[in-house]
Length: 166
Figure (cartoon, rainbow, N blue to C red):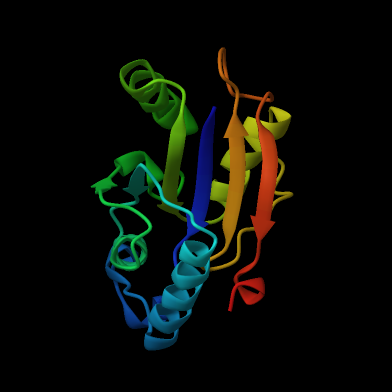
């Protein structure tokens, strides 16, 4: 079985300060909180086989902090994790990964809200309805089924706001 962790980027600079949303970095508070969350996740003995990140600066910085804390060895930029990215592209990627690596392991995705919440809803309930909110540096854990489509057949096992990890 594959465990999928959906992690929202940490607190980022105000949109009004940047003409290009893709360039907004984490704030100092965002970096500190993300490091604390990463440290707590590491204390739970989590280790991701692979971490995929949105290419936006704040997500890449979050992914790098997770890597620096020892949660993963590899970070790959994954364009479908941009805001309004398509879960179908990730599912096609997962099918390929699963065929190569087997259906065992742990994958983390660092991205944006509402997409991560909606992706979780699609995997667990089969459709998105803006019911799950992932706070900045929050985590959702989902077990993907061993065979067949994960849509509506996955199991939610973790939904943690960052305040419970700080």
